[in-house]
Image 1 (spheres, helix red, strand yellow):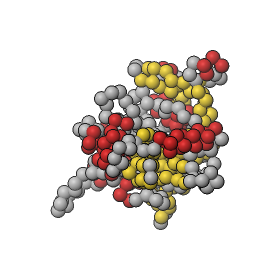
Image 2 (cartoon, helix red, strand yellow):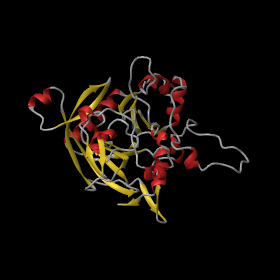
Image 3 (spheres, helix red, strand yellow):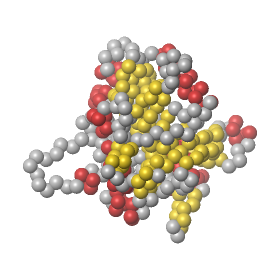
Image 4 (cartoon, one colour):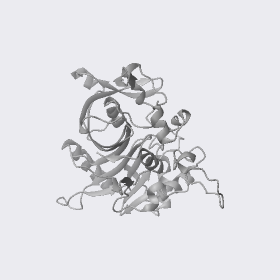
Amino acid sequence: MGVFRVWRCVSGTWQPWLGAGTRPRDAGFGTEAGRRPQPQGSSNRKDPVEDQPFPGLLRTENLGPEELADVLRAAVVDQKGPLVTLNKPQGLPVTGRPGELTLLSVLPQLSQALGLEHRELQVVRAPGKEASGLVLLSSCPQTASRLQKFFVHSRRAQRPTATYCAITDGIPEPSEGKIHVALKLERMDGIDLAIPVTSPSRKDFLEGVKKTLSHFHVMATGCGCALVQLQPLTVFPSQLQVHMALQLCPMLGDHTYAPRVGTVLGQRFLWPAKTTKPQRQVLGDALLRRLHLSPSQVAQMPLHLHLHRLLLPGTRSRDPPSELLAPLPSYFSRTLQCLRFSHQ
């Protein structure tokens, strides 16, 4: 598995690398949302690490369709021909019920804001609501179809096209490998949850059980946490979160699947998935101090899962794939800074 570095070591410390083809203004989604004006002439400023535990988070409660379209327009990292790529903020759902504010619901306004006239955008690829990162849009149905075929063919050939970055509570051992597990969706308290299935039968597969597969590679470690590169080779809701929880290393900000990981006398174990309900993630005191967080602030911690890199087909069939990159959200970079990762 190829390793794609998103951080570089400078003078002994790890610093974010935005990557070729990206622009520095996109690091915080390039929007005024999440930026706070700094007081002028104040000599008693708080430490920004303590004052803004999760900088750059998008709050949609007070946004209308036009305002959200402006946020997404500022989050565009690339626009070529019919393709538009943007850096989706964490917490923004792609789809939802009628009347809900979603990425899909504001595509007409976004198309107009980008000057696409009557060519309305459609979603080709996007991470889930709780993840941040690359969203691929197309204003041409034929181009969208070609890209979908490329992604499907790559999955069948077990060639990863998407690279995620995640920060985990715990360090996976071994430091790289593949995770194979069968999953199914079960409804619990009105929420669809991914449940592992051991030794699934043919009947299970007929009833919605799916085989899932991901590559993982630990890129850096610090304070009992890890920066992990994840490359899914199948598509299933919450697949990467479940896979990391099964490694006993849940992602930071995972308030859905992290509760399945328990600890007794310093040893981690898995609670039964069918009887473990989602609840606020619990972090150790040492990690809370390192992150400058109180236990109550953990409830607002966003999921640290970011779709950083996408491969696209070349212009001609023999051309190598091209890549799209999206820089990390501000809160993700802050967490990395607090943890002072060292190269694995």
